[in-house]
Length: 343
Image (cartoon, rainbow, N blue to C red):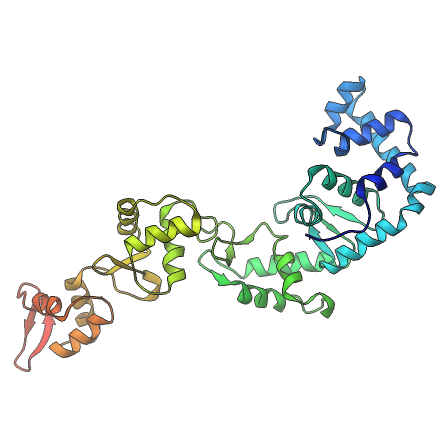
């Protein structure tokens, strides 16, 4: 949590004291500053007063303008200055939800702080759009540069990219050449990454394109992929199910997990119950298929050469490989004791 020295409710009350009753009541309803923290729409407020939504908007704008011209506004300069310095310290541009949440978990207090941001002339809000979340900034040029850099970062990624946070930050920094060194630290850059709706991180802390199943996990197969990737080497399907339960807090039945691994081409069975990721380069198929692919790639090989290459692809006993080689329907041996596939 970030500590502030002022009392948001006291400050907003002082600011609203300069307003006529109806204007004050509309501001309270519009920003959730009363006992009810729900922010009412222009239509809802208008119906309560028997006026149009446009008239409510006019009264809201009038109220904000009057507050900014008042002595009460000047009296709260220190509060606005503290908020401005705080946003600067967090990177100059912040996600609204994250910023308010870092100041208080109380919805009522968050609403009062939000109202102070609306009133303060140093703060500019950009509404949520297709690319970015609701955000506040205190430097227009910086905000534009950060957003442009985030677009460039996203454009350079594909759906399969899955990067450690340090690498993602490094890539982002490559697009931030003109930004002040004041902001170039991991905490600030991490906050800037969070502005984007196009890139995100998954449950194990790796970053990628938001729409990717590696980030927006939807089912057991996606969970299994991340578990095996995190493990970094072949792992038994029972352990995959266990880790899914631990990491994602999802109940994973062993049999169901095994069935999903069998069905998905992202996974390769490399031993008795052991699965690896296809992207690691393991050949697909049973031992017989692996031998055939090795011979197709390298040509005739001796028994020892075949065993050596198969064991790099599968966690099996040498005897299993030899049994498969003896199958004359699939493999034949020449005078030099080299094996080749039967065509």
